[in-house]
Length: 248
Image (tube, rainbow, N blue to C red; front, side, top):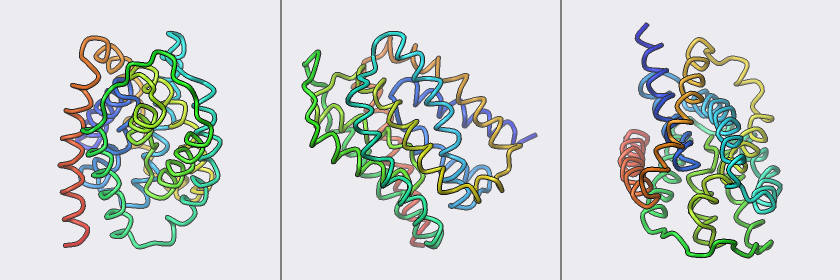
């Protein structure tokens, strides 16, 4: 019963993050699965990809209905990242758990710093720079596959900072990128997915899907910069804790 309650509560938090910020779900899901629910690093990253892929797909539909998804840019990101995501996913199965945890902590910390420094741009319809979008998408895909994150907490700053996209469009578009990247990474992790504890992963996913709508409503009431700042500080603290734990 305790595991069920923890899974539902953690899932709700992940759903709010994805719905409001278009990313960050797996950055919270991985430590929650490891430190609250007893998953190993490899199992946790695989489970996080399942949870985030399903939750992101649900949230994507809601953002698409409101016209907040830039499909051309998102698909370019996703196409460029699919191959690296699969390669990173295959590589992750051959490294020690402590290395995977440390790599995750470094990536999460870097993303938190980027989110704190990122500022919303004023352009309503940014020009798509294919070269930049493809390069950023490939990098995000590799990170997704290796450390088990959907890439949204990196995609949103990239879409804003590199391509000049406004916050609402960046959030919606990042959900498309997350969904495709997570599914591509899962394609190379079939063995670890089959062995997951679905009595935990199922409720975790359900809580995240249901809470994503609440996150979207929260984003409509609170400024993007405020939400991003609060999340970035929390993410930085989690990253520091995981890095210390990995090297201790």
